[in-house]
Length: 201
Length: 201
DNA sequence: GGGCATCGCAACGGAAAGTTGCATTGTCCC
DNA sequence: GGGACAATGCAACTTTCCGTTGCGATGCCC
Image (cartoon, rainbow over all chains, first blue to last red; front, side):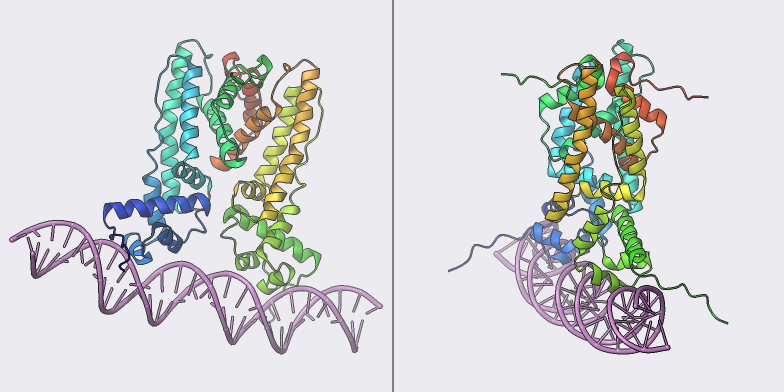
């Protein structure tokens, strides 16, 4: 009786499997405690293969991060700031709910990582700042928002709130919650922005 | 020539030094990668001493966490929701800016920690929920906030924003920023809540 | 100043990370 | 189809670091 043998994987497909495994480990174990061996086991690959392709741990982590960096694309101009923000946050929630996204989020929280990772983090953050700023700029031009509105504060607050729900409190974050949040920040609690919404039938 | 010899520390003072060192390690290295030896080095103490007092890593971490748990006390009733929130966030900022506070914050973000730590985290979070809820309840009674306002959403959003600035982006968070943030969430961006404030002379 | 508990130090054992050499397997090219 | 070369798997090895043990040194209390 011959056992069914999986054909050996190598090249591009192997790289993909390893990086995916690394991201999963990052999401659960974190950066500092990440071991090459556990990544190898998870990927079903010999650890020597990993050591040969990525001599240092940072090389592997950096490669894994880079392949996630473009997962979260933001765009869109719905013509209304409320809808823009709503769409943006939904995409962010979907992104942060995946293993890949969660890994990236976790990495960006860690301090004391290698300088190159810090640089990557900084660059990514920079990239993600321009789109929201244009979003707010459009809203000001349409007189939806008053002149002098701080785009960074607005967006950071919303992102932080969603991230807080998903990663910190471990709650889910459905569309109603996002809508509630956008209303809170846009019109303010004083004006009924933070009210509990009735569940749609 | 005799070298000046530091007198040996023991007892209560030693415990304090070790726990403080453990908190610093937690703040920088994190839980998973925390090693007893590094804590011992940082505290200037033999590692055997630590192993004898706290046989398991969790024992040490738990003890360290417990001695921080009460650092952040919230209270206060200024008679206005705006001032209440302002004071609350300032205290939170001061707390999260310390090494001890940062350690606790980081710990609460970590998943996959020991069950006892999870339990501690859950209990602490629970404690911190009652005060804000009363704060909002008072505001509703004073007709500052509309009925049905979600206290949890309001507070979580504010805390998450401050935490995001301090721990995630590594920025400072002065009083002006906090005031700006409170205004944003209370009156809303549409009503000028998120505007950049002029620096007081 | 003596007894006792606590602490530091150095050496030890073991587990896990990282390295090396070689056999094996795909892949490319003829 | 087959041969050469590069990539992978595997097992043994070295190294490093964590946790343990025994003993000598040091405070502390009476």
